[in-house]
Image (cartoon, rainbow, N blue to C red):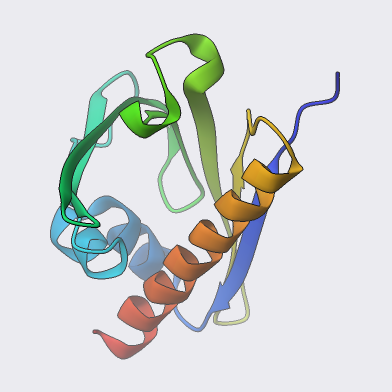
Length: 142
């Protein structure tokens, strides 16, 4: 069975350093991830968690930072209790890759382990909205 991978992309008028800072600074992350409180030191093998409220209900998602190349790649494992029990099939690997060229940064985000095409479409919609928010925060200083 072929893995079902969700992809979202954007291009941001900024430096890779500015985009990286927005990807790894909890106070900035909360601005484009629906107020989510993120806790991590963003070093490989470190834990990461996202907590907040969605549709009036508290949530806490967890994961591990898997790979870090500052200003180039941030990769982490992500688990949300909303997807079911904490088993490997309910974890996702999220990779954010930055490519800087001529004052622009192309951001490509992938999320693996989507259960079906409907799940893939849902993930792509959510990640596209998050990347649009990231772009606004970085370009507009929102």
